[in-house]
Length: 154
Image 1 (cartoon, one colour):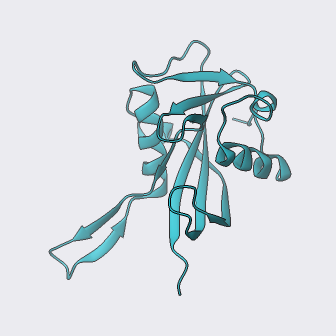
Image 2: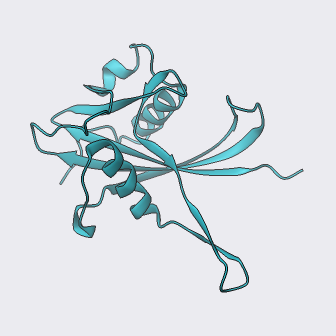
């Protein structure tokens, strides 16, 4: 039996030395802005599947929580790729999760979109506060292992 592959983008949004966490009511916890990578079926060409560009997915994720658009030169920048087998909390099925992690630095005073329940927190506080998703802590641990925690250069 083939293990399903779930492709996800996590966009870490940094202001000063704090990361934006957003509340996800489905999960009942705060996490980083994240979304599955979209797939499109091209009916005109034998139903070929096209996947959303990773950078566009990262920009879409940031746009959803910040309530704004981005020029291509403003897109979040890739930080790392994480691949890990995990048992899904939703359905209990073991899956290969491919998480592309992107970073976006914002100037001081930037706000998130109306209707978004969010909080700016230092990375260290995400380790001990509740409710924070297991996935957010997993991403932070991997970034720490690779010396990629904020602040980022540039």
